[in-house]
Image (cartoon, rainbow, N blue to C red; front, side, top):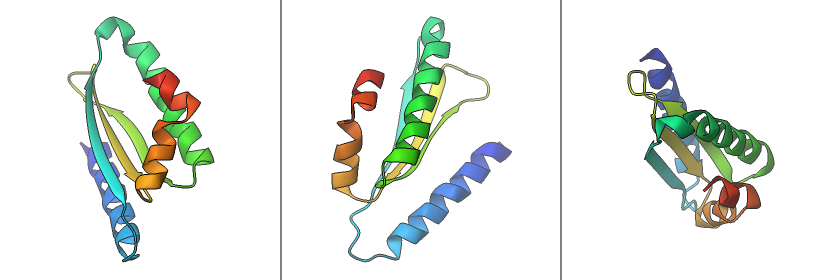
Length: 101
């Protein structure tokens, strides 16, 4: 629970920073994914790779954080924030994201 609250605070902080730019058309998403248990390890590895690589290499990715639910490990929540629609579109068209999908 503490981890979720910490991440929520980070997400809100990103929202506040982005909201200061009145010209910004920021994109925020919360994705909920349920993974078949026998693919969970593979999925988590891919999700973490996409998140890490995207945050390091894509300027328009402000936040990308996959999390597992505590009691249902195969249910994943991903917090996402992008500078604008162009950054989001660039992200979902990267070879890494396409492979992840």
